[in-house]
Each structure stands twice: as C-alpha cells, then as structure tokens.
Length: 53
Image (cartoon, rainbow, N blue to C red):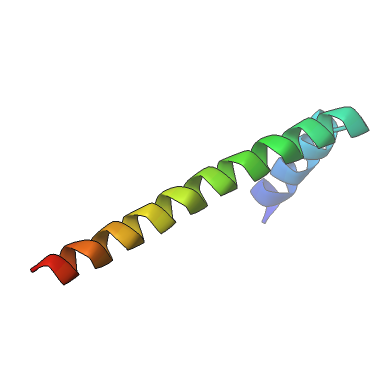
C-alpha cells in the first residue's frame, strides 16, 4: 500500500498545473480511442471471417 501511495504522490507532484493535467488527459483520451478503434476493427474482422467459411 505504501508503493501505491508514493505513486499517487509522484503523479500529484508531476501534474501540479492545470495545463499539464489538460495535456495528460488529452493524451490518455487519444490512446484510449486508439485502442478502442483497434478492438472494434479486430472484432468486425473476426465476424467477417466466420461468415465467409
């Protein structure tokens, strides 16, 4: 539990300004949309392969 506390403390220190938090939030949102799009693509490709067989 002490390790988790130190990670939270470090993130709080790094993201001390609203601009840094905004940039980090934008990056995290972009990455999540990227992986969501990849997952959707993989799921639709698998369905098409099953219909062709």
